[in-house]
Amino acid sequence: MRTSNKTLAAEVAKNTGYPVEVVKDVLQGVAIIVPRMLSEGLKPNLWGLGTFSLAERTGRILANGPLKGVVQLGSHCVKFKTSRALNKAYRLFRDERGPNKEPN
Image 1 (cartoon, rainbow, N blue to C red):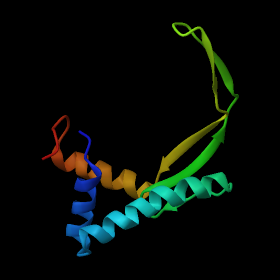
Image 2: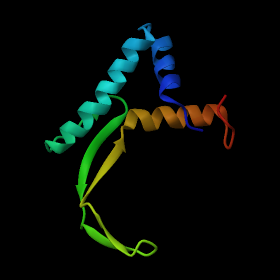
Image 3: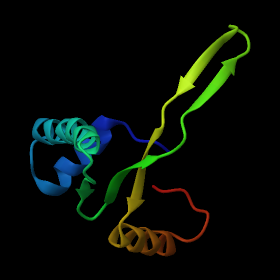
Image 4: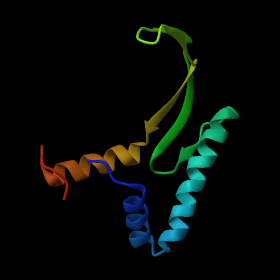
């Protein structure tokens, strides 16, 4: 189940005591800064969540059948490696909830 940005911002605000508008601004700032850092060759790390990195791969050219055109795909791919803390927290939450149960 996906959550909206508003839901995420509201949850963070509720748990931290910061106003929702401040949390939204911070989350939007992260969304702007992470791609910029990746383009500079850095690996942004969100403490407790994980690390973003940029992987090189071979660029590809695809033939677009219905339009009779060619599409060139880029040679970079953004990867996200979850932190040990996030993996551990998820396992604890999953075990507490029980297998195959939907979150509340």
